[in-house]
Image (cartoon, rainbow, N blue to C red; front, top):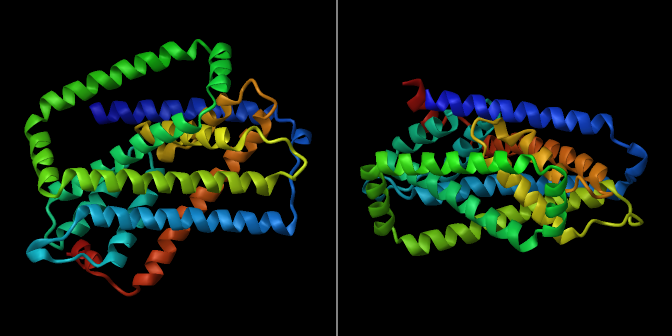
Length: 315
């Protein structure tokens, strides 16, 4: 029941966000966007796609590392682990889908890796990405622009406050309800060297977020010419990471579609760069979707044939 409520809330938020984007697109002044379709812009977009694809593949490597080794110190084939990660990653575009986590557990269990370690790897991934995104968006953020956006859409602030209280209440409820499981996870973290593991993950996932941010900046340069006054590249990076974070934490919104683009645009709602940022957010979304598919295709080709996880699923 609770999961259904989260899915419904996520889908509703996605629909409102998509509606906002469509509204802004209807008012979009294309003449204000200087799109450069030269050979150099095509090369830049191709570079952005390659970087985004590599970041997805690297996320698969990080996840396999966090899972660790199986029974009798058995090492999981890295290529197969990355393939499972990339294939399951496509499931995020289906509302409320938990197939990506089920797929991971099924595959790694075939190598004697416990359900606890697979869950732990997912928790490490989620927590490191959220913490890294919060820090990076704060470091690169333009708080004057955000303050102006809040002044215009101040009525949204109470909504976010209510959502924050609900999230906090659910967190407290989960901690109290799952004390035993949390103690088990904490003990397992200690066994595997919690400080070293967490420090590495935070640095690694922060690097991935920066690469994704650079993909956005490269896309920006690809769609604009050198005569355009930029909105501040470092602050643009911070705004994008903050928008990515909002799309990531919204449970039920498939891949954060609509949410990320809406937040990114809202941050620049009172600036002359709004139309450019909206077009940029849509372009980056297309690149990220293609990169997710491309990462799966590359990982599939690198493995080839019928793998052990396929045999496990057939049985």
